[in-house]
Image (tube, rainbow, N blue to C red):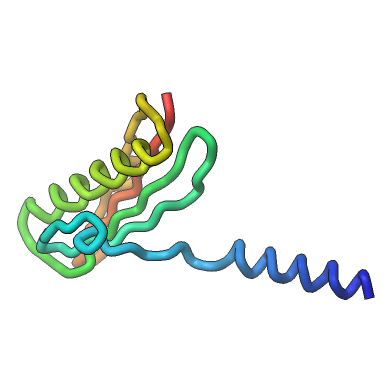
Length: 112
């Protein structure tokens, strides 16, 4: 019986670890009206770092698409660092590219 409980617990941990991160709407959460309607994910939260992925929710053209997505990443980083009580931190873009019509930015935020 104890072995069966251990197996069930291990399966539950494995499944929850494989779950996709929750998507958040930048416009709804930050009360913004960016035309690209960015969607963001906060992942890999650790004591001294975390990752932010921002994707366009709707297609747009022109230079504002990159500006909007990067601005969203910066705003999210600032907000999250404030919540964590981090006074000094770095934001580094580790990916910044287009996938078809969608612009995607992945940034790593590290506490100083």
